Length: 488
Image (cartoon, rainbow, N blue to C red; front, side, top):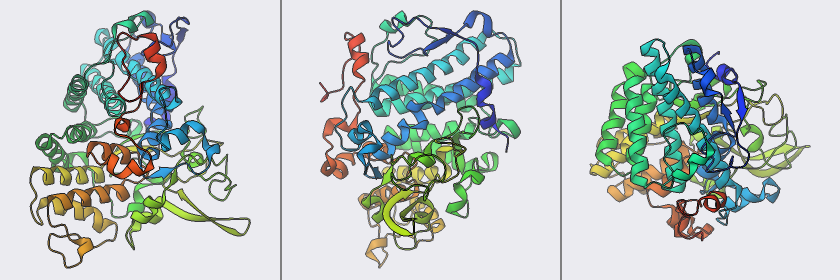
């Protein structure tokens, strides 16, 4: 399939070196700057700039590494079982990461570099003469991406600098301090609302993989859910469900058909980060990252097994008997040199890389099953209704997994959901196994105020619901960049 995945490399454009003395300041501008006065003249120039903005999703500080390190490794989904996987990763897993640990700086830098890419599109396209409908769409795509970046940042760090213009001189970074969480969310909602209005429901051919109206709606629903604005979340997520005739979203009949290289950009996928192996650094690392250290070629046949995301015992035990999702998601042993080695590992991203960390697996950011579960959660928060609509959407997910439905008065206690509190736990459990290893678990536990309850025994303290601001950013601008409580 030829889609936007094959176009990422087209975003490579002429760059000029930035000032070296202040290039690290806030990381609000890329390490190299575009020659803005000479480049952005035509619609094709803007297409290349937008492609570069999509390419930012592949940065190490985004979906190449950081988002699954934070979303899964920080939670009870996965763990580090061999310290050779990396001391900084082990620190995240064990809740001993500091402001100097690389995860904070990598995530911060990657997101702000990617935000700069989106700001370039939004700002520079204004004076370009081109088809106005296409111009509006490009702006909508860039705003979707910027909204996604800030949604990640505010959930990880809390209030962050809010930059919505192109940073030309790194000196400008001194003007930006941390905004309130409320202000950041207001910008996210504004960006996603604008994106929803401008974007089409679907694309064809080489444009498959771009942000759609449904993606903006779904992400906005998740934003409202995270803010506990249950009525707005329910309204927006119901709009996604009701727009099936336009979006073509559906819960695929088989869980296995959602994953794997052959199934990318399926009708269940709402938005995914596109990777392409053997394409000048556009490949994904997940097959290698998630294979156990010491597994040789038993789990991944090309490149090194890096052991960076190993399923926990809690994750293994979370699956009910006969849950079809487990075999698609993980394994508990492999055979090496004729011997069975008992060791958990992820298989959702299995494949054959072209070289080490050069696979073809995309990363799904949003999919329709997530929307259904979020809608069920929002309905329950608005008011528990025994065997009401929230049960319908929860049980659609369970039925696809080959499991019996849950009801309000089921004679089987394990399937009985008798009140609102019990339904909350039922949703938590279903999201745990349905979205396993997709980078959602940590964010789910934090937004539902369940993280400390479930992770306190692993070393989590209350202040660690947020990650530390990178120490380098504080050192550069102590007047405006203040560390999160508990990390001083």
